[in-house]
Length: 335
Figure 1 (spheres, rainbow, N blue to C red):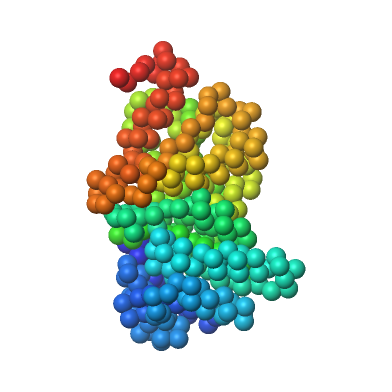
Figure 2 (figure 1 turned 30 degrees about the horizontal axis):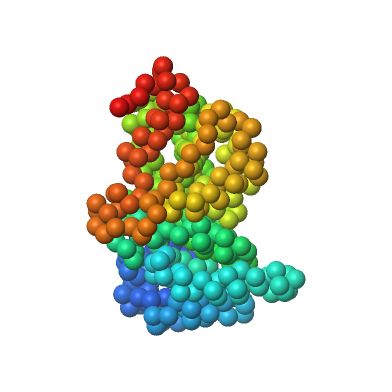
């Protein structure tokens, strides 16, 4: 089924099972969400459970924090990731610090749901992940590659009392996925990457919308004789609690980080985690590389998306270049 249907069916089940869960945000009620993911749910559960708000992200989050501190389980919908900046101060200063500054005495299990990464346009294709992860320590940051992974993360988060940010892939709502038979029951652990493809030559680490891009590139690289170990980080906070990436580097000896944030954004954070915290540098026999977006906001339309952010051809070129540096006889220069 389409990705947006998976989100809708999951929350339909959660509304039935848990009266504490409700959703507030711009256009989630009458319209049913900008991607039709909540279509028909307001009619089924009423305006209190699925409520439209004004266009003011700071007050939307404020309502969620207040309700969460009183024992409810709010899903705060920020329409696009680009608009998270309008409630970022409240996220950073209030929600992220609450449990810490109250010495564990208060909790606000507020889940911020938003949609981001690649699309086609300046205001709806942002991915400022470096800004986010450095400003909201104390909040889980989940970056699912598809809607099945997203609902598994929601299920995990709703079982706990921690605040969280879930960034769904904006261009994934009209892509078909297999509907899980245990929807509303299965969970995705936080801080545990997933190895999507095993390989011996090169470890590529990425997340979110870039996963599909790298998967396309891996098909070409395989035809060129390069075996890629593809790892989806899944959550940036917490990050790879069991050092799975370092274990992969012990096998491949080479690391490429693919990220659609600006250069030096989330890719720098990932490198620091892998090279320093996991001592991944001990296993490298080639310099690690990053492939990020261009150092500007994405240009408009399909061409703008293609040339502003990493594409499959970019991944192939960088990955092959790394293999050429390591073994020029086996992998001669392409041009």
